[in-house]
Image 1 (spheres, rainbow over the protein chains, first blue to last red):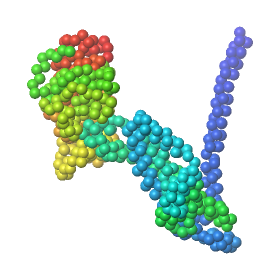
Image 2 (image 1 turned 135 degrees about the horizontal axis):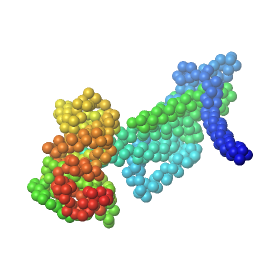
Image 3 (image 1 turned 180 degrees about the horizontal axis):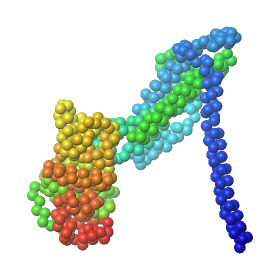
Image 4 (image 1 turned 90 degrees about the vertical axis):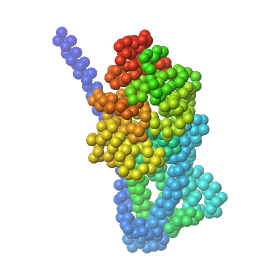
Length: 300
Length: 260
């Protein structure tokens, strides 16, 4: 009898322990892998700050990229490289805004069409093609813009060609986010407006789009932050420029293009870090902003 | 179908052989003939899927929104076929309130009430607008609760207040008929009681058609009742008589809780 009791107790004890052990193993694994997941971004940001922060000053934002001799002299004297990336910042903003102006109206209109006709064959084809477009390598889009715009329209590298290649990248993102946003709006809201005798187009533009506005804008911001760091298509289209350019038909610089140029010039290495820090900071801000808008929308 | 003692003179709405089908084959409501009495509450009840909401939504041509839905027969509003009226005319005269409160989330309380005018691009003077908003909100007894926060978003109100706001939105047009599609099914008992009390007041000025899942609610507020089953209007009569002495066996079984 004693033996049996002891055996039982023992068994119960053994049964409990493996659970605790398993639990501990899994907790440790979860913590380990979460740290593995988040550590790259922390390492990247800290590296960029350590290496790039000293180059960031007022002239970084107000002056164009320096000449390689100026940079060499500054480095041999142990000074900070003079000049900045103004031509890149303005070029990036110029091309991204142009791309957004092209992609937003088209993307939202197609998104509306997909939402209104979810099961039509044509809508399904459009949806599939948009998904494929999203997977097309950006350099291929650059090549296409090179053939169509650089060769065919502007007779040379141009901001327009860069904008168009970027807008093609933005299009599928905006289109799908528009469709998803509109789908989340309860149908009863649409019916409420219809029941007030409001014509259908006004229901769409005065009720549906304002209601989904935060969703739409967070989709647009995400699309912008996706393309703002694109380098490959711009190499084949906008090429780069050492001056600030606002002409659609002239070569234009961009922050990622400048990073590539700095990489190819041993005297400019320090500027790589500061430009990358600026670009990453900009994209992170856009991402956070779009997340903030999306969470506000959920709260409503 | 049995209609008893309903000598309705000058009906606001009359339904002639009204049928609706969602797929063009199977009928969701079958050849409904009925007349709706002015300044009274007519309840439409029946088990889920019997076609109550389908019938209600045919009255202000909500089905036009979905091209697959086929409506045959006719509905006359004060003697005029609703098919001949423009959308805005019809829906100014026949307001609708939905199952779940659905104020426009982007608009303030004030704008929600005036939404029918605003969204249709009808311009009025500010004083006229203020008057419409105040009157509509007073009609739904919401004025005292929200008069200091008219510029706040309508979605900040409680569920019951939101539903009354939606009723006010329908009243702003001064309609002759108000259609309500289970307006209290998403509300708590206290808010429900308020809405029911409101309906009893509103029937002095408006004709009310109320779809309800809740037999007790039909008994409490309605003057006439329709009982629908499998798309057919089984019985239509005065509420008191129907609840005390139903003529149809199905009605009796439903009212005594044998199904539904």
